[in-house]
Length: 232
Image 1 (cartoon, rainbow, N blue to C red):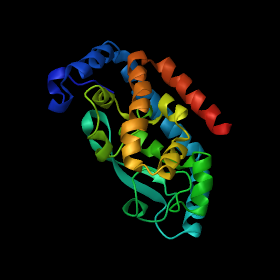
Image 2 (cartoon, rainbow, N blue to C red):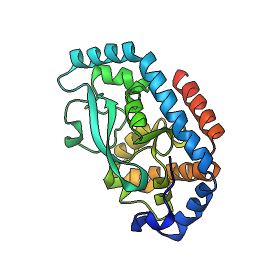
Image 3 (cartoon, rainbow, N blue to C red):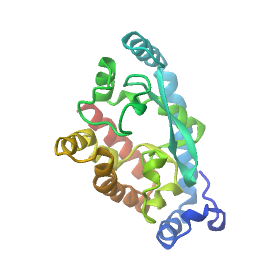
Image 4 (cartoon, one colour):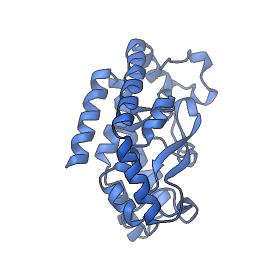
């Protein structure tokens, strides 16, 4: 990816907190370029290898419940741009209109096949399409819906300097996020409020550290750690 000039950034990103991280990334232009090459090569290669698997999962989803194979939802990526994410559908059709935008542990909207897919994190694989298109990258802050991005602090907005990611250290640390939200719900707390005030700020600390430490080697290690965690 190519980092925009500071003056060309959206006005809502021009603050002192973002500038600190911008200055760090501006010194890593070669690494940012290699990151894009890494994304292109591996997303295309993995998609070709996993094509038969894609077909099998697609058939299972269609046989299990009515609706589309893919779940498409608007998310936010680099510089606050919107894009439609690709995920295997794991919930009933139009589930986002039936409740909160985040999912709790035993969400009744999740289908039978969806439970299996979610358990082994297979629902995220179609995001390789987003990576190939340049809307996402392998490692980076997980893409949020606009509702949650609107709640970002000035420092959190620094994560929008880079493309949204398929995985991250925050994703690994909070792989059981749905259980945290489920506990909050049982305690009578509002799910969205809990996510915005408790979960999101903690995840963002990991995401901001990632930007500060960014390197191709760090991306590679994060990908390996993700695979290990999925296989556990």
